[in-house]
Length: 247
Image 1 (cartoon, rainbow, N blue to C red):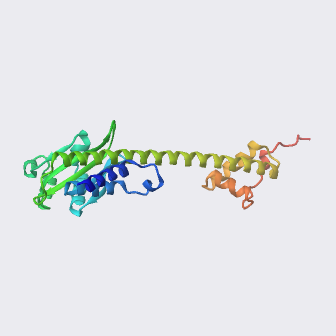
Image 2: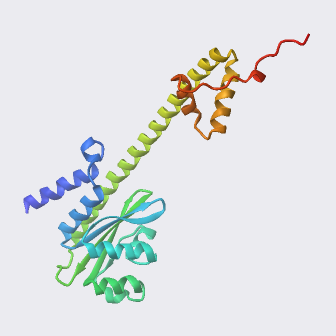
Image 3: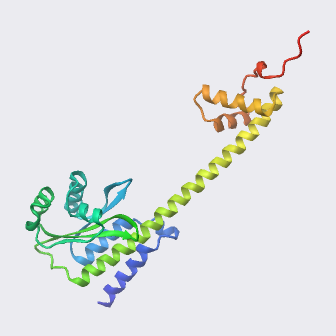
């Protein structure tokens, strides 16, 4: 019993910790599905909100994954209700829900499942998905303690997944800012090179860069890099230069 409690504790820490390099390589949805299935002795599936739509992120059991996909496609089922309301859903007899979830309940019973428990992946105002547990006739009835442990796993995974999303957004913003700065430096350098080559002003050199990029369907920083590398020489437009006074 002590060993099992320690395993659950270690899993909670792993699910919640998403700061280190090793944790970034962990598949948290799969860890949650496998861990919850082990605690509850059921099949398990994790659905995550991807751009406003639930999608199967991990599963412990092929039939469980297929049933989750049915919910996503049909828009009806216990997971859809749980995610919409942000509240746990439990049904110990799927025959009772034939009218509420006709398509899903029929498929679940045909696959041999008799009960379902769905727990939200939720942290304060953030709702990112659900954890589904599917039990069959051979599965022991889940105790309050088991469900509480499963909810704790779901909460820890939610924290970890939210941290991962935040870190990914921060990395994306940093990369975008670095790219914008590098591109700007290239363009400024190319303006100086062109100005010296053509005897034009810096503003005229920038106009040359921009017009060439537009007319050739290229990014201006790409043209700038070619100019600096001397693999591209833009035509000098005499019309852009100050003209000598007429005699």
